[in-house]
Length: 245
Ligand SMILES: [Zn+2]
Image (cartoon, rainbow, N blue to C red):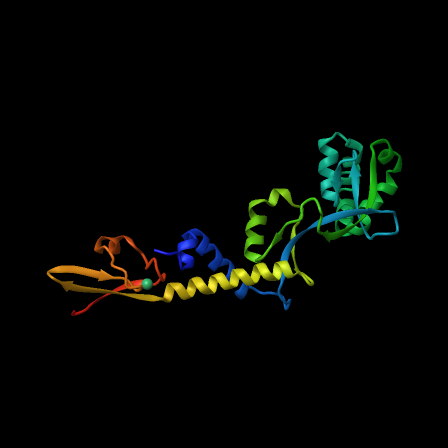
């Protein structure tokens, strides 16, 4: 029989995909943005700035370790044999200085540097000023139609990103994306209509033989009805009606 329905063209998996995608797009929070839009991933990026150009800072140890608080500095100093350093921070002031530094994070690490300038120079310990920004990088740009797909991607690939955040971006004057989304919603609507359709087959006896005709009046082998989930001609659910002829 001729192919007349989406059910003849798309696999069940493809139909499920289109229906789920269309429903999710229509029901998700679009953050007051008109279609077409996509959800992109941005990452937290640390931009190093000259002193005076950024408020945040960390201590750079051995050019690779970033220390943001005094407690981490003490652990690092102990683990790496900077005994003078850790002694100064933990013991010499009976912990009082440590408490003071930890309470006042903003100035604590700076105080360490100024008090032990020569030591810090000798051990490649320096203050690095920085700003944090959310940025989309061309190296790992990825786009999604739904927040749901974005979240699933991030959860499965979290090791790949640094504090990722989603950003919903309107696609200004993008007829291709408008067209793609229009097709998705139209396909989904058609699949829904097809699943509600009922097709009537007629069953009757003629010269002691059982005859069945489909919706397009062709004769149908009764065995086929046990196999078909839906009418191959119109896509409707098959309902059998007995007729007198
Ligand atoms: Zn039919």
